[in-house]
Length: 158
Image (cartoon, rainbow, N blue to C red; front, side, top):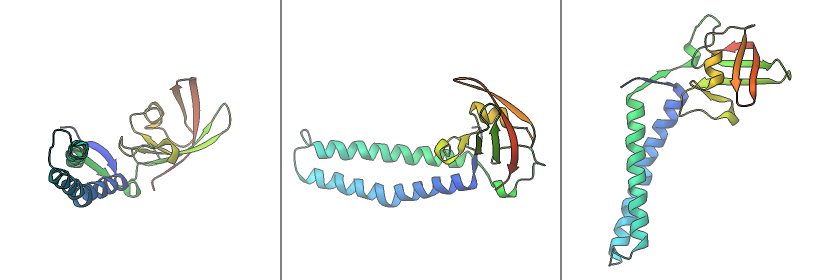
């Protein structure tokens, strides 16, 4: 299995979710199933069916997280030294050359990506265009609305 890059913060979030699923969600759904079974006829018991569906989701998510963590290559952006180049985990200040709008993005793994928080997936078009660039370089990105050019203003490893 190939390794999946993930930041230290992203790995911690996955570990917290896994812990919550195993210690809170799983016991709660087991109790709900037991309570629904106590009501008698399972063939027409909607609470039982809902609890079994929830149990299947929880068990599937636990397996998914465990698989991701076992294949994860955890990268601490604070310990990176890429000589000013943009790499996975770097935080980048950009300026749109057309509009002059300034944006800041951090390049993160698939599970961590959240554009509202400025976290972009390493396999997204903009991240792929930025990888390897340095301060002062221009990255050209094919966006849905056409070609966009961004000047790299700063590269930080936070």
